[in-house]
Image (cartoon, rainbow, N blue to C red; front, top):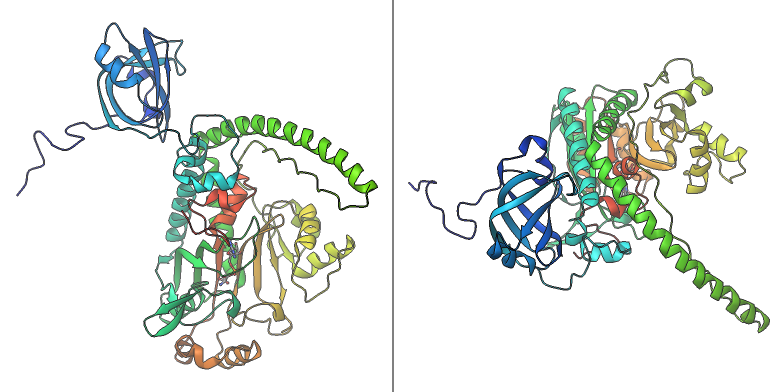
Length: 511
Ligand code: AMO
């Protein structure tokens, strides 16, 4: 047996971190600590140098005096930014230091030197386009305000998992390589699977329903889904994380109740991330200043374009388009959601619904709102972005849209028994953004088979899925929530790529 004691070899040897930078405060004054991280910045004034070391929790000042620690001074002042070091030293009060204290080092270890120049600055306050940031994502992710987004994601996932666990849901994993489409045949990525053609799954839909037939009763899955959608928008990804649930002996209203609870927990957990919200807001303050500068430049360029255009117009030539100024960010302020005072079951009252935390709004009312604003839409149409913008004016926060037309929903959605042109499907939206869709499912095999035929799908391809429906399938309901869509709403990001570590879109599979 090898004992894990004594002198360790390798680069780290016996060096271990005692504190993250953000965990050192007044209580640590006078103590010896070991911190580890990246060289954020070095200011060398000759006799004394100030080095900022940074880890995922923040940064602090290491003060290097040439006369007292000449070797350490020499070892550190020449380092490039973003080199990796460990420092053992004493935490010492200094009102002039950025956080009111500094570390006077006793020992240091240089673990990795960073090459220069950096393809993307971490400490520099320079505006970078999203594409440049994503090309150099590992550096972009070193910024605290960016890391904070993923810390919030971690926290809300933890909250939602605990919430679902508490409600009796069991976490499952279903295959991602599949033989059939679930949400529609045109949005599939093909995979060569030995001698067969298979696909990357668009949704765990069929498998979560089969698990209801297997008696699992309440399940959830958090995993990637793949959509070969060609559109290139700020809301669409080709790979995203879907949080899916399915529950037996439940109608769509039960599924809606679970969804409301889970989203409430997520928002509450996010609102508790005070440090992360603060660092996102610090980042936004800096970013907005940079955007001001960029916009001033755009203003100057637009003046020139306008002048050119006068000339082009006189010559009857095509005019040049003006450059679009960058939008600034509002400060982030995540507040828990108000209690919902109305359930659809109670007498529906539009005024009450508008006041409540997560109103239930019928599709019909949405059409009505859009029509009143002169959007060309009628019963049976999907709700276009133009229509959604008008509904957002009335319902700017979270709300459910229920009672959808059966025709525009997938084959597995249960129609209302007395009005089969309307179905038990629902969406959860935030303003004009769709976050979740769900429904009570068809559990009658003959209706399911005829729906497949109606949607031009071959029931033979769905044999594996249909089998459990022949041998005792309980009525069941569920939903799929787009994690990135929820994160966009929570963090107020305008582009979904901001809330994904390494986004996959129409033009990006690297890094
Ligand atoms: P749907 O296809 O509506 O439903 O997807 C569920 C939720 O996933 C999110 N979403 C996306 N997020 C980012 N990029 C995309 N391209 C994208 N497409 C969808 C949305 C959406 O509400 N099987 C059903 C769910 C169910 O009924 O249980 C389904 O997949 O937030």
